[in-house]
Image (cartoon, rainbow, N blue to C red; front, side, top):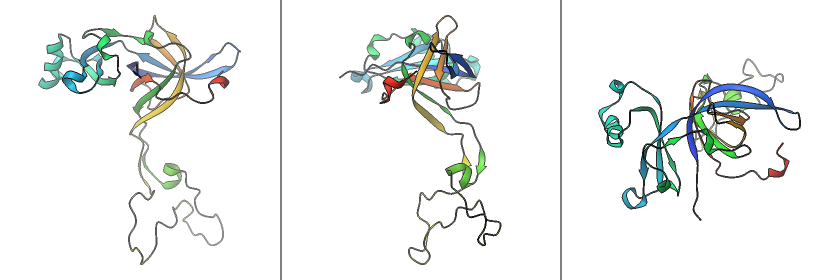
Length: 221
């Protein structure tokens, strides 16, 4: 079965709240979606897979590397700051230079949003992994936020890889799945997405059709 995936690059503007048809308050994230331009079309015969490449954002042509500049010159387009590929089986329906706007999505549709999460710096195990911490009494001395045991002693005599410890938190590529598009403002190119998406305001995010649909579809407001 052919999978037709829609996607667009945009800028997270921030969060606000709107009222739904039942008069309930719904928290939404406002995304300035596009406009994007199709910079290349991947085909199974030539590239081995089917995808469409999207460009977004303005950039001074002097700041673009020669390989990337050659890509845009070949397509006859001005350089874009961000490039992303969207794998979809209907890539052949796109043409180089075609504009992609927020109108590709509809209200009530489920989407996945990918972005770079906020950097939190160096964090302990309680903040980073949600550890409970040690007891506040019973002899614990100034180690209340410690992780506790990290492994056995003489056997095996070392700490296994993957043990959750303190370290740098955030600043990573993150995807939030199955969010609902509350509404679409086609004139201003805005997507109002129910809930929060990764990253601070002003950061670029990638919105695409959801990989899976939630089981509680009937309970959506």
